[in-house]
Length: 174
Image (cartoon, rainbow, N blue to C red):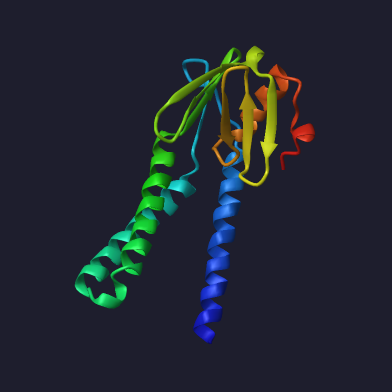
């Protein structure tokens, strides 16, 4: 009973710290790089969560191999795979996701390394999707999502307000 309460408190505390850290980093203002661009990258929280999931997945695979029996032959591989796949995808997101922008354009590199370029004057719609904490940007030919948890997101919002008719207030970004 006491161990469950302590576990719940620790889980809540760690989750709160991760959210606080993520929020702090997304409000960090960026400086221009030598190229004249700003560069947003994924928050360190994604790397930590990804690595923890990979470690848990590897431990589960080892335990599964050492303790193999008929009772776990279905559920054990599924659970281990869930942790491993989520960890790998989250780590890929951390390593590959980038948003570079300047006075002229935005270049978004997604989690698998594919790039999309948007010119500020081609953007026809911007919407904030609060359930996934992302800006959805649309032009006539393509669309993309920009994660609110990226380091320096506030700098992107400031440039967006200068280059478009959208503002933090009318998009309801917290």
